[in-house]
Image (cartoon, rainbow, N blue to C red; front, top):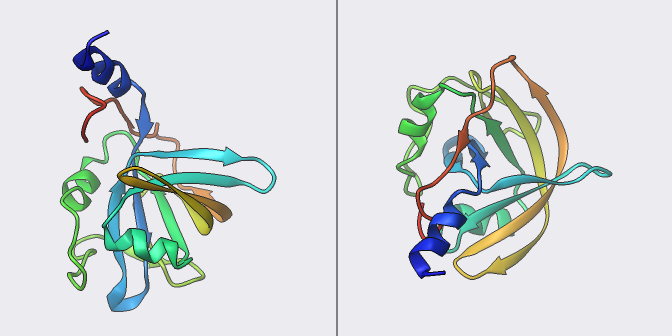
Length: 157
């Protein structure tokens, strides 16, 4: 199997689309996250991969709570808004309606649903850090299907 075949096959691993929100007040931000999956039943756990070097990775390593906002099929406005990423201190939620969860982390008011999470551990996997987090609260807001993404190549986003 050639390297291009390998990358094409790896890219066909489907993933959901989420907006990870973290921080509070003026320090809150959001980012597009697609490498998310359930990682346990009791207690309920998820895993999420964040590229090494992103300041959000540092915040999660410090144990800051976060929210995984589930993106519904057709909610492409979230991809356009959060896909570019935000530098530290740049307002991430201008033009996006939010409400705060119990910890003060913003949640996207129009998202399909949300999972409030607390980091429980992590492992470095080369260029990403995979976090395992407890799901402490969550809700679904609609009956839409979640957005699913399949990449052309497993070598890049």
